[in-house]
Structures are given as structure tokens and as C-alpha cells.
Image 1 (cartoon, rainbow, N blue to C red):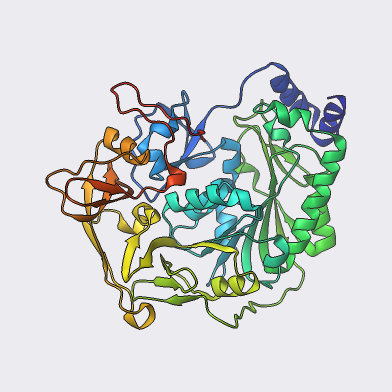
Image 2: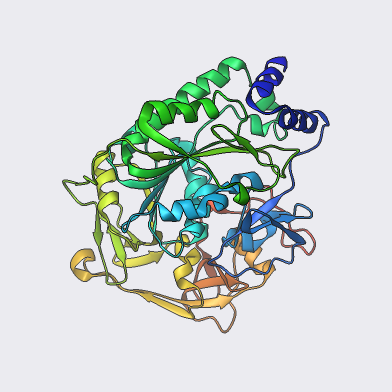
Length: 471
């Protein structure tokens, strides 16, 4: 790894490079586990926690629990995330100040959803449109799952290239681009990351990053904010690319006030670096740039509407899939991007349910929506002029214990309680929506999605376990 050490010394001050090399050389495991709470959901973890200094809703845990066996995790009460990746909290005011009256924010390379959920939390009072995009198809399912767990109604998840999104001329006020990188920040976690590293791969990544930013650049309005980040340390992918964006694409580098930076974050000429050994976490680079080149206005127009209003309570019908969503914002972008690329819209706000044989079958995502917090029962009616003769969706709510919650999450049969009415029931664990069952009387149909199940579960006392991959 001689090339890596030389490049590190070129990219960081000696004290920072030495601190990182010492951490990498001492054989220590990955950084302390940390979580970020969902401010829209109540959560009493019982974990032994201490605050992450730069993010008010985040905490370090004294030990790593089995998150798979915590129903609150599946209900979206918190997100497991490396503390260095929580840097958006440091620039929250900058992001908020960049929003126009009809604000729109893009998380360009979003999977698995950590920064998107963080943006949603930061922006929760203004509730602009958040487009959470992932260009790699196989990385979209974990993104849609994590967005659903967060329960917000102002998010569109897309699977589009930077070039396609770049056609939305001047549409976004803020673009966060956590671009694919050589992954030097993964060295403590993965031997494969070390073995796959080379100076050539670093330069290839740097070129790809410049292409991605150049392709999406037209979509950022003039005066809009670009947040550029990587989980690597070298100057090719970090500082050199920030300088390229400023000088070649047309942007002003935006410094962050020294007093808002945590102790140990390295201030560089073109950005900021979290370095293991100086701060907790696996490391992250970020920089802010203000676009000063001309861009067009919000020229979005679709020749046909795939998504149409289906009710007075911000209900939307996807005419192609007979899927109903709860979405609180304008449908202009959703219809435009689905016209440009018909398959790229994956979710819109919160999935409510699918229309089948004149009935609305509740979607698992509806149970996770923050809009249902505290509701004792629910009824959702759609516009008959749009959806035809469709009966309303009605459901009741029931609180369940941990063992029942784990049975539900593993898609085991749930025995209904005598007090449960027949029909659809939203199950809650500690007040958090978890999912739906259909109570048929003597048994319940478990409506938890197969792809989200806990894969191995034993109901025997003391034998709860899961074989699914932990976050």
C-alpha cells in the first residue's frame, strides 16, 4: 500500500495522515456504532447512548445491539449510520437558506438512504420536494425500504442517470452528490476494499465523478447549492474535483464557519475531511459550492399524466399500476420524469395501497407513515371519478408486544386477540406503526412484505434470532 501512503501524504496535512495510518495499522475494528433518530417518531430505546457532537438527533452506542431483532428499527424510529456521514447537520442552515418558495432538493446517489433520511429530517418544517435517486438498479430496493420506514410524504424515489436528471433545467435548489468513490473510508471494514484499491482505480473514480457532476449540473438552478461528498481521502477524488467544479462548471466555493466545525475535522483548501483517529467515524469528505453559471428555469412539462390526484387528502393514483400514494406536493416533477423515462419513478410519497377488484389493499408502507401517528383507526376514500367504483379502505389499530412484533416481521402466523375486530389492522409496537394484518376471525393474514422479512426466526423462548444481514 505504498502508493496509498504517498497519496495520503499528498492529500492531507502530515498530522492527519499520520493519525489515519496509525488507525489503519493498529488492526482495530470499525468505528463506534451510531444511530440517528427520526424526529417525527417517538422512541425510547433503552440503549446506553452518548450524543454525536455535530448532530443533535444522533448518538453513539456503547455496544452494537442486534438491530434485526429490534422492532423499533423496522418501524423507522432510527437509522444506523456512521457518524462521519452525518455531516449535513453541520450545513443545515446553508441548505435551508438555499431553498426557493417551491423548494426542491436532490440526493443524487442516494442508496441506501442515510443522507436522504437526514435531509428529510433537516427539512421537515419546510417540507420541500426531496428527490431521492439511485442510478444503480440493484441498489434501489434498500433505498425504497429505508425511505418508507422514515414515513415522509414529500419524497420521490427515482432510478435515473445523472444525465436524465440534468434535463430538469434549473429545477433543484440543492443537490447533494455523495458520488461513487474508491472507498478508502471502507478500509477498516472490508479487506476487499483494500485489495481492490489502486492508483488507477482512484483516477478512474475521479473521472467518473466529474462526469456525474457535469451531467447533473444543468438541473441545479443558478445560485443553488451543491454538496459534494465522498467516503475517501485522496485529492484526486476530493479537492481536485471540487476545484474542477468551481473553475470549469461555474461555481463559488462556500466555506463553512470554523466555529461550527467539530474539533478534529481537517479544513482543506477545497473542502473538509473527517479523519479516523481525529474524530469518531469511518471518515468523510465534503465541500459546498454555489452555482454562479446561468441555467434555465423550471421547464417541466409532460405530454401525458401518469400520476393524477385521486382524493382530497393528497391522494394520488398511478394509472399504470393502480397504485395509490399519499403525496403532499405538486405532481409536475413525477409526471415529467416518468415521461422522460417511464420506469424510473419507484415510489411517490407514501404507498397507500393497490386497487384490486374494486378494493384497496393496504400497502405495508402506509403503516410506517408519520401521518398516521396517534390514529386509533383509519379510513381512506378515493375520488370515484378517477378511480371508478372503489370501496374505501378502513382499518383499526392494535398494540402488540415484542414477541408478536418479531413473529409479524418474520411473516409467521399471528393469532388475533379477542378484542380485535375483523378486517385490516395496523399493528403498532410501542406506538410505532409496524405493518398490517387482515383479521379473518380465527387467523390473520400477514401482509408484511416478503423481501423485508426476518429470514430465520424461532418462537421458542430465548431463541429469537435472525439470519438477515444487519445494517
